[in-house]
Image 1 (tube, rainbow, N blue to C red):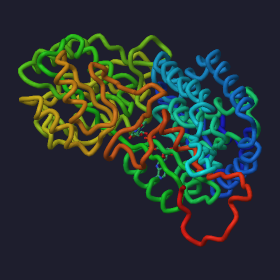
Image 2: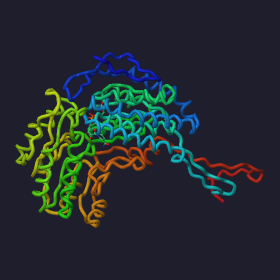
Image 3: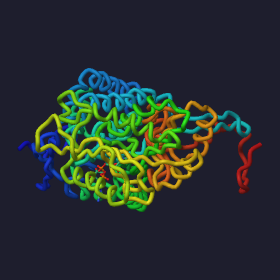
Image 4: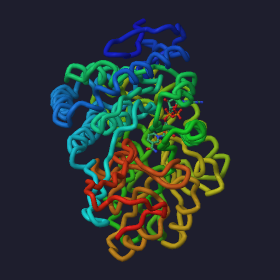
Length: 496
Ligand code: NAD
């Protein structure tokens, strides 16, 4: 079995820890590789490499740094099918979806190419007689990026292009479930000319995460994962004095008003509910339908579901397997909970016939109607292909339900009523809102992040928040002296 190594100081290496974790091909249900799991000394080695590389990278001219990132963008664009194949092999999502993930990540690289403009400071002339004030943005130092399994390329790419473009060095700790994408990216960055030590990949689990969170050499932490771990990371890293952005879990609602085009709403619910087997933080998992159109909408969704093909992502399927056997079993257990709680299981994904190996971690698209809002099926983040329908009497009841959720990552409204949509965007307590757009992932020029238990920290991913996160400001007050500035005055400086 092949062992996936770390990437430290410009080269793949095994470092010292011999602990490993099995890496599965979820469509085969088979452990095909193993990945090393770092210990504290390995984390030290990664941070040391990032620390040694920092000064030269920080001091490299904008022009030279941008040329490296530009070459990386060109290589990535040309070779992204390779990366997509790696993602499908370890995550299971279908190839077209994996390619889409890489393309969305590439957007952030393209945005980061504008960093010299985006980091420009401010300048005020003559704030006092002969005195000018200006501000600078400078990099922080070595930063840690800790990413989840569900977007092994895109989530790291939400962060490292901006971290690198603004002059920081990086230690990326990818998910141990699909660690190869990070290594492929590291090698491509070096092919593009990135100096050794500027971008490092430390493989590992909680041990590696804790070591990075506590390491005095790490200045900032960008984390994405489930809410309990996101909260933990935020608390631990801020207590250690670090700057932290920590994105957590989600339970995204799609509100359908009676005036909506129900065919388009049904298509959108399917795409957003079952794409990537529901393992997206922006997946729709709760369909909130304002009566009297729920029967009609549920029927349209059920009809469409009969055409969906679940199977090996390398074949022409709509939806792949779940990430692990345990996760598949956990997601499937919610179907029993739904039945026990009195909901109607309209389509039971456990009956699926996959186009793939019998041992794959399969669960077909599942539709559950009349889910009580007290049920764990409604409340928990299931993170699988399970779409719940909740019927509400009015727009107000729908918004009240969404706002009562613990999470606030994404939401969507389907309507042809502009006034209702405008009211929704003002009233709903969610960070990313789609108006007739079911998966409203903002483009790279805007920032990605939710609200409430879906994010900890003040600054979101990419967009202007990303630039601010990875830079610190300095304000310089400057005067060029002449004899008129002489004299002793112990009073507090005032402008004149
Ligand atoms: P996870 O929380 O299990 O793992 C995320 C990272 O934390 C991984 O690198 C993992 O190795 C590490 N980790 C796991 N347990 C840890 C522990 N006890 N202590 C320290 N580190 C630990 O998440 P996942 O299952 O890989 O990913 C799915 C979750 O991520 C879902 O909840 C999903 O909503 C969320 N997610 C959120 C966003 C967002 O933008 N808000 C985006 C993608 C995924």
